[in-house]
Figure 1 (cartoon, rainbow, N blue to C red):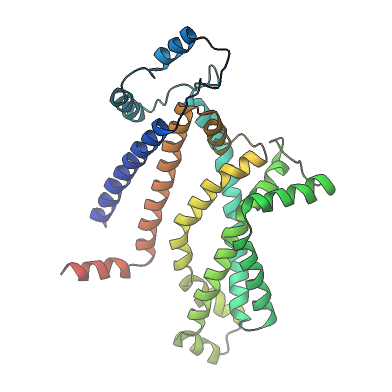
Figure 2: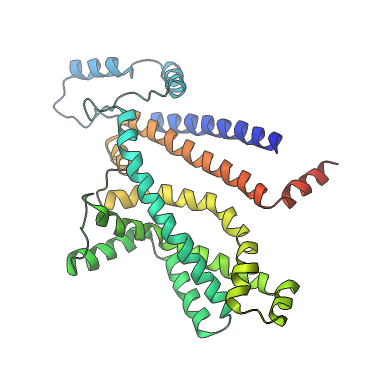
Length: 311
C-alpha cells in the first residue's frame, strides 16, 4: 500500500505539471491579450503594462516564472481587476464553491442511491421503468438548460428562490439542484445494476429463505456490497461537480472560483486563468488519488490481485 500511495503521489504531481504546461501553451497560442480590447490605450501605456506584467519577456522566461510561482504558491495579480490577486480570488471564492459542491454531493449521493436501490427491488415493474426513464432524461438534459428552467419556474414565476446572487442559503438551493441532475441520474442507474447483481447472490437467497425482510436484507447485506461502484464513481463525480460549477456559478452569478474562471476567460485575464486552472487541477487530481486509495482500502482484493500479477 505504501508503494501504491507513493506512486500515486508521483503521478499526481506529474499530471499537475503536464496540465500547467498545456494550459500555458494554450494561453499563449490564443490570439490577443488582456489589453488589446482597450481601444483608447496608447502604445506607450500598453508597452508599460507589458513590461509591468512581464509579457514582453521571451516565452521561456515567462514559463519558468509561471512554474516558479506555483511552487511559491503565488499566482500573481489579475491583469483586469486592479488590486485583486489570484490568491485572493481563490481565498474568497473557494469556500463558496466548496459549500455549493458539498451541498450537491449531499443531495445526489443519498437520492441516487435510494432511487437506484428502489428500482432494483422493483425490477421490471412500473416503479423501475419510471425511475430509469427519469434517469435517462436526467443524463440527457444539459445542466445549463436545467438551471435556466429552474430559474424561470421557481424564481421568476413562483418567486420561491432568489433568481441570482449569493444573498442567503436559499440562494444556493437552485444552483445545487442544477449541479446534481446528471450525477443523481447516473448514480441511480449505477446502484440499480449493482444492487440487482447483489440480489442474485447465494447469500441473499439464503437470507430470504431465513425470512428476513427486504429492509433487513438491504441494510445488512445489500447496501455495503453494492457501494464499491459508487466509491469508484466518486472521482468522476467530483470532476463533474467541479467543472459543472463553472457554468452554474456564472448563470446564478455566484462568486465562486468557477464564476471567476469563466469571467477571466472571456476577458483573457491570463494570470487568473492559469492560477485557477492549476488550482482546479490540483484539487481534482488529489480527489482522484484519494478515491483510488479509498477503493483499495475498502476492497483488499485489488491489492491481492496486483500482488498476484507481480509474481
